[in-house]
Length: 213
Image 1 (cartoon, helix red, strand yellow):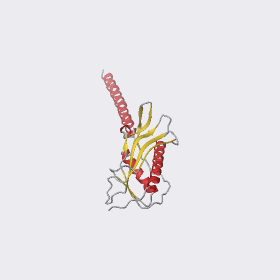
Image 2 (cartoon, helix red, strand yellow):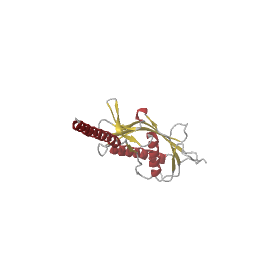
Image 3 (cartoon, rainbow, N blue to C red):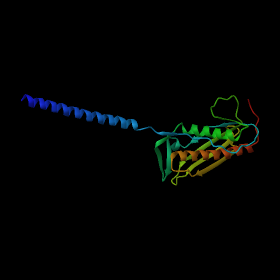
Image 4 (spheres, helix red, strand yellow):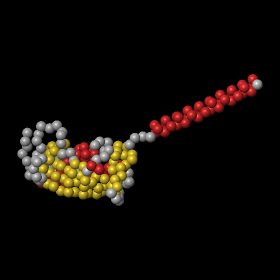
């Protein structure tokens, strides 16, 4: 009886160790799986080089764009079609999208108007702007055919409360290089560069204004 009991005890210990080992492996596997799930990939818009306009010095304020609420998301809007808005499950903007659009527009205009001072709304400055650039954006996404589309109402004013000196509704499209989110963001950046091109040309054609310190 003693030998039988001893064998039973040894067998139970072996089974217990095996079960504990299997549980430990299962838990470890779960932790590794959880750690391997990475967060979203973040993307930024970027300025695009364009034509230089040799005009007299001007001071230009780029106002924070107005963006349709359904586009103002942290996740990138991957497509809008058939009344359905699709957000990317893995790709997001690295900054608030309206701030990013305004900053890129400012950099695009500054590059095209090297003799002018271009800054963003609310940026610290002691100089009153001569021109204000405003944008109301109703489309900033990819359509059902895969094209990047931007619709923007661009306004130039000499005073924030006065009628505009320039007002133009622009709808521009560009086919991304491929189906990736990065290619979509590049195409959207290129369209913003085209909008900046039109805006810079319009500013170059407006009569210069006196600088008010």
